[in-house]
Image (cartoon, rainbow, N blue to C red; front, side):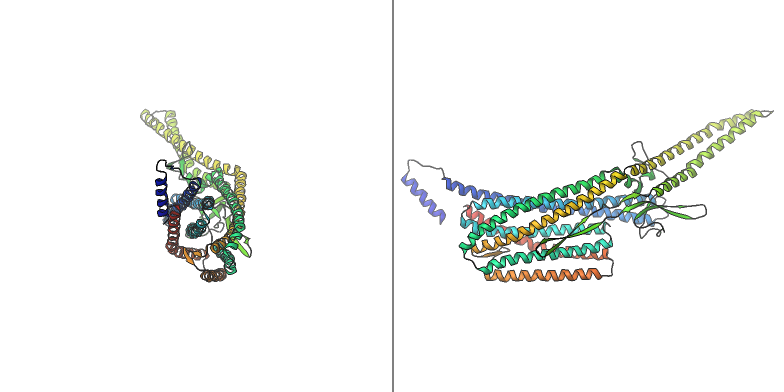
Amino acid sequence: MKKMILLVSMLAGVMTFSGCVDDKESASVTAVREAKAAQLSALAALSNAQAAYQQALADTENALREAKVAYETAKAAYQQALADKANSDAQAAAAMAQQQMAAAQKEIQRLANELEQMAIRHKIAMLDLQTKYETALKNADDESQALLGGLYTAYQTAATNLLDAQQEIARQKIGLAKLQAGLVDSEEAKQLMINKENRKIASAEQTIAEWKAKLEVFEAQKAPEEAKAELVTEKAALSQLAQDKAKALEAADKACKEMNDARSDIYDQKYSGLAMDVTGGKYGNFIDEEGNPTGEAFCDFIYLQGYEENALGKPVEATVNTYWFKTTDDKGNTTYTAVMNRMIQKTVTKTETTAPGVESTHTYEAYPTYYYQLNAEGVKAYIAAIKANVEKSEGKALEDAQKALAAKQKVVADLEKAEIKDEVAIEEAKSMLPGLQTNVNTAQAALDKANAQVAAIQAAFDTMAAEAANWTATVEAYNAASEAYCDAQFVCEKAEDAYGLQNAKVYALEAVVRGNVIVDGVKMTFDEAIESAEQQIANAIDTISDAKQEIANIEIAEVDQLKLAIERLEAEIAIAEAEIPALEKIVADTKAALDAATAAQAE
């Protein structure tokens, strides 16, 4: 109809002013057209950002799968090396596998950190794009604002729910990988399960608060004009809270980057690399002038052992928190000596109120994993044991070569002193001297080479000892940065909760102005919306009750908490992934409705 009226008007204009046609549109028409174009552009940018983030999540999951495969492969190689006692290279293989396991663990932790920062930056980007869309929408007429605003809110809510679910699945998979890769012990696994249930409670409490805010508006049954006037004030408050949320997210992004940088500083420390060298068996092979293994075995090397359940048995002095070596004397007495003590990863739980009546629990890692502090006396004993091996091997070989040479030299001397010289015997004995001297030279070179290798190992430990203060300072800096990030997360949660609560009020008031409520893309009457709100509140109350019962069950469970945590996460991931298609359909439906309405308004 609008097109027909416009066409008739245009024809009338042509008939009346056939001699002079002005094809310039009025300023008001231009403003409307530009406003619609801005809406379409902002909506497209919003949709593209959602798609890009979903792809980033998928890429992270692919990288995680590769890291898990690398860890499992290395772990299998390690266990095989421990079992293959007859193989002389088993210790070297076990040490190499341990180093590969540590590298895979490091990659899993890196992905966990990357996911955290990626999530924050996506929230910042989305908040900016949402603001741009809402700004473009404000330039539309009241009717368009009422229609598109409701459809946009429905789409935004659906898209947020989908991305939150996908992000939670990614987090759960990261958590599962950390459990499976031994980055979390049994007691920590128990606490992490409790933390997860506490987060469910916090989320449900926030859900209740938001639905109660909507319910209050629905039940008030204000006139549209009255709601419209109130909406101006509430939107202004929402705009301020959006700014607060943006600032909190920026601060959290900065804190997350500083934490990740601090973790990188740990890996950049000389101490860190040398710890990997001495525990990973690098010196089991001779090294070249640049410090790289040549591939030629250093047979006198003693591989450090980390205690494992399937090892040869638990030494009295060795615990799961040590790297140790053993020596056996001529009488068959075995001594176990700790060389380094493991710095255990600590997962600290902090609880802080983020919304009225809501306790939100967040966890963070306060210490890095699988790096060690030196036991000075153990290091001395370790170097002494390797030197003793060199003395027994290369030293003894040189001694034997020297004795053989000296013996032959004595034979020559005795022959030459004889009253009757046997020239043939003398020449024969002398002919053997160069070969014996070569043996001495070769043995001396081997001893020098072995001593140089021992010196390199000693230098590695000396450097670690010299770098211990820097190492400790770097770890403490990471601990502080980690805690600062945790605190920044709480600020974010508070800002997001406050924004969510205020957004619920705005959502409800917009529905009153519009005359209907849109839930998951479905229009409802206010009576239906009230019933839906009451059901949502009841569901959230059930969630809280179930979570509290789960916490009680976890507390009293007399099972392997690590195994239980893995089983629970695997089950939860399966359930969450099964729910994704339904969430995707809601997003597609609400987006289609918004696109159609936006296109129609633009005509």
